Amino acid sequence: MPSRPNRVLEEIAVNPLRAGLPEEGITSPCSAVFFGASGDLFKRMLLPAVYSMHLRGILPTAFALVGFARTPYDDAAFREYCRKQLDLFMPPDKKPQGPLWEDFAKRISYVTADFTDTRHFLALKDRLAQNDAEFGTAGNHLFYLATPPPVFPEIIKRLKEAGLDKDANGWTRIVVEKPFGTDLDSARKLQQAIEAVFPENEIYRIDHYLGKEPVQDIIALRFANTIFEPIWNRNYVQNIQITSAESLGVEERGGYYDSAGALRDMIQNHVINLLALVAMEAPISSHADDIRNEKYKVLSAIRPPPYADVWSLSARGQYGPGTIDGGAVIGYRQEHDVAPDSNTETFAAVKLFVESWRWAGVPFYLRSGKRLPRKVSEIAVTFKPIPHRFYGEATDRIEPNVLVIKIEPDEGVSMRFEAKVPGPKEHIRSVFMDFSYGTGFGVVSPPAYERLIGDAIQGDQTLFTRWDAVERAWEIVTPILEVWQHTKDFTFPNYAAGSQGPQSAQHLFPDWRRL
Image (cartoon, rainbow, N blue to C red):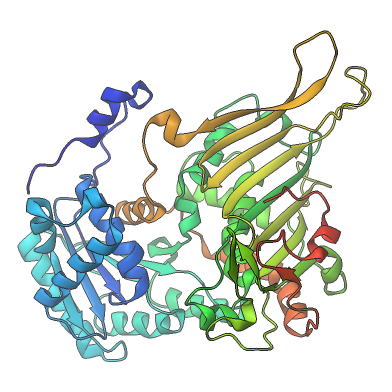
């Protein structure tokens, strides 16, 4: 295999914070099969992630990639297709060329397939055996389901029929993309189909949010620093806000989104996963199941909103025409493939309580929406105000301290605290202490899919969601989902694109951080 620059050593040379870091390469041989390899997710996210891992020297030297989809390609045509997509979606300095691309390309193959035909899965089995012989992939198979969710059970059934659910010589793992079901009932049926073939320790339910560097750092921030853990509870925390906002509309996903909505698309998975990480107790070790046990305990302590209280504990909205970045944009109901009288929410906000000793009485406010003023994902922990004021000018407002974990677009941590303004007067002002991952460590965090695909190859399930947590998340949002579905909202659209969201969200919680 062609030699690759040692990125870790290069980074250490310019930044001593990275000194002592181990090599990041994966040693486990593997054939990775991508079902739906002619689709959007593969070409935009998964293929660039795998190729970037190859360039960085992370992929095992004994590695092969197999595409499996309906679009007719032979191996040569699919390699050319992959090259063109990498040209489109990789940065200029990572374009597919030279010996590194040639080495990667020879490891790419393709099976033109009907997902309902076992013969094509038998052809896949033969191809994997060829990879074992040619590239030394040792019977290790990673199956990545990058198809629409309704196809998942059929693929899993055919894998079983072709004898691909296990290999006598190696391991088998299956990666399942979200959404994991469209409601509680469909999620349970999907789980039944998967667990009939694969045990839980071979199932990797992927939530790309969990692969983002600041999300991974929540545990380190809390449990590697003594200054935070003693005050991370109901005695000192006033509320916690978790926001995932986008300035974009539904783009080309109108058909999917109109059957999903913000509650299903974001709150049930991404945002609730963030809540679990923020609220969990310290695990007994860093083992995947020890961490996931604590996350599940948090979700178990959240009481689903009673049906009668849904409107007092939630808010929904749908964007109308407005202005984003100085340009006029259309409303949701004018988007392609969206019903002109759609009842689907593009904004969802929920108030939840974790009924545990640590968090009793502390409200967790979750919100997600499209066509908001800017793209931002963050967790804001607002601490209680001082109990007694004796300092500062009477006209000064002393703000509560806020710790903000910034997930995107800026990755880092920010702390707001109060300080005296220099001078003879006792004026108090809020000031900020900021840490940026990019500036602090001198590197750009790799995309989330790189970390998650690497972890799946290595068999590390820490950043993947276990079934009990998926089921519990659906149980939490089900009352809200059912009430919303059975109530026609005649106020839609109820917020302009580019605004802070619907007025009902302000009634739910008037102190949202401005976007």
